Image (cartoon, rainbow, N blue to C red; front, side):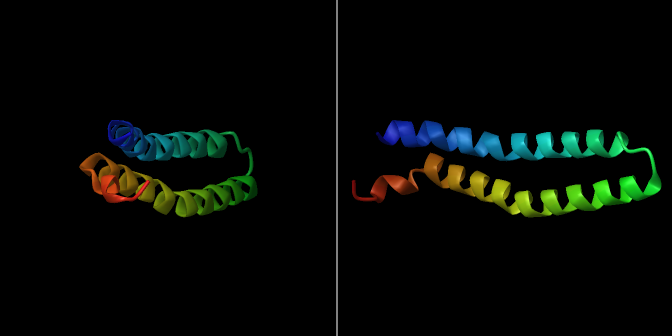
Length: 78
């Protein structure tokens, strides 16, 4: 079970940057599809809020994965 926790730690650590990269690519793509300045402003605002909310979540995934890889969760009772 401890080996599984460490492997999943690597998965969580990789998932954070992958998710943020995906969000940035989607934001750039969706903003580039707008036609008017008002649409572009709204799209930038919406994606800015989305990225602002999900950045700490992705950072938390990376921290959680680091501690799992380090073995901190092996001390928990089953």
